[in-house]
Image (cartoon, rainbow, N blue to C red; front, side):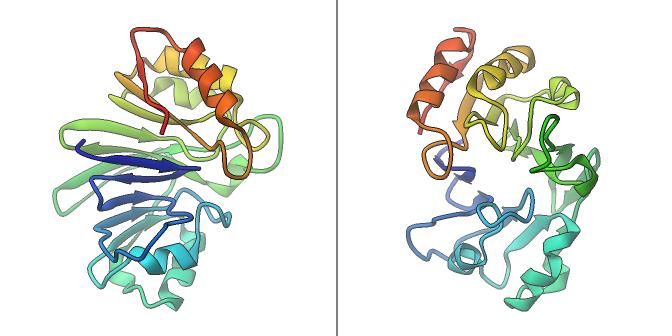
Length: 204
């Protein structure tokens, strides 16, 4: 991957692939694909989507945000509705979904069918977990690059994230979900300290 930017769970890869765009600094209207994990405002931000979308942007999302996208002018043919534990392909681009939910709280119930993604980008499997605890399904992920929440409260803690990362064994791991609404740089640093040294950790 040529370029990666992370803020909260807002991830930009190669300046054109977006996950949960939030607090985007300026309007680029350069998005090729936008992946939405769920409908909470810090993951599905209409104001930020307006800054990056264009008439050709493809959106991948749970069904609950479809009509909000249509309201802001997104062509329904450019929206792909997803469910957990499925694989998808369009235009030569392939990805699969993973379940994202809390185990010990109700902030993100499993019944809502919210997701994370494993996406093939530049011949690498990139996993973006979204808002989730370290549930059993996530331990089965195979990926080269892992974006994992570390802030606690609404997601797994940094210790839990490090333990999960050590089980998945990606080549590179990026901590997310800290420093904006919940969590701090201390959570990211603790995550890096607890992750096996064979795994490269990038804090952005």
